[in-house]
Length: 429
Ligand code: URA
Image 1 (cartoon, helix red, strand yellow):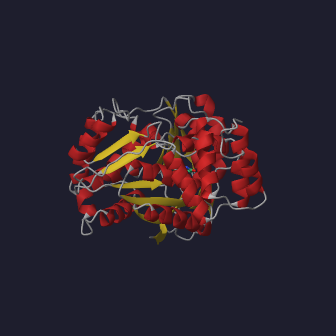
Image 2 (image 1 turned 120 degrees about the vertical axis):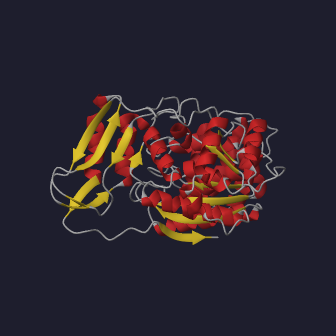
Image 3 (image 1 turned 90 degrees about the horizontal axis):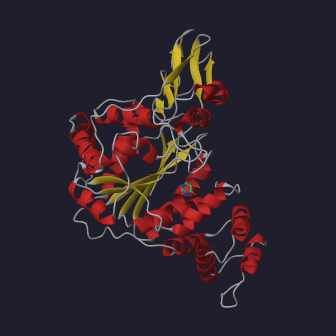
């Protein structure tokens, strides 16, 4: 290490390993030095594990978040003539809510700047889903993004490489060092990007259950509280909803299949849970943006949100009328006996869809636009022998066996109807 560096990273790692607290200058230095390549990957790996095991207090988390924001550029949306409000989901299976939500909220004159990512592992990515639409692209200059926000109101763009670059590097490292599911690291990762984006309002959808980072309501609540405080202290009006991710959202998992379902919601139909969550999040966003009386159901039923969706898709080069891609092969899963669907495990189905080709194992992999799972039943529904439960879609049928190894134990038919599930567990503001 160069003698001009302010600290020795080994001292910083040791301090956390032994349960100590860092000073602000140490945090600012270590994040910056990692971004510059002065702190090596193996040192940051040790440091991330020390944080995983010892935690960070609220002051340290806030300072860590600020250091990650300072690692790159920020986007100033303050000069837009509209109020801006964004939504971020901590990631789930079948979670296509971003697609109808942005246009729905934008149809009330609010700007919704969604900087999204691609899927990695069992949760899908918004960009992969929208890329199933012919011609649609998330690549654009900041100037063009502003134009679409002023004109249409909703945009879904790829987060640029210089927005919180420290997080980009650190997240890839956490992924391969078993340090992802750590509240201080998740909270600072998400909030550094959202604050750097420059939105004035933010609604967080913190998922709880088998298909989410947080399996238990208590830990999801702690994550939500940490993020809401980080946002509020940075001047972003922030609210969090804790929502269920024990079962997949809606009846489709996989890119084009999810776009189809999102369009159904925009047409006033679609599965009850997707519509309900879309409307609940839209109301929260519109309240933050100063439009508390908005009738969001009427905007879906009356075609106003759909108009904004079409304009958004066209503004990003897509053809909203083009048929969506379909997979070359399908496989039916049927009920073996009579009973009630008492397990539709989000993780098992998410992994199954990924194995069918809907997701990627490495960043550079391509995804199959038509691959995924289409459910024909809801959680708790009564079924008879032979009734179709799900259709699996893939271009590569040799993947079916591996997919079924995950999907089959994830679906169970029991004798008793299960207790109904709650969609929204809590709201933190
Ligand atoms: N999403 C992020 O952006 N970061 C995390 O750490 C987890 C989810």
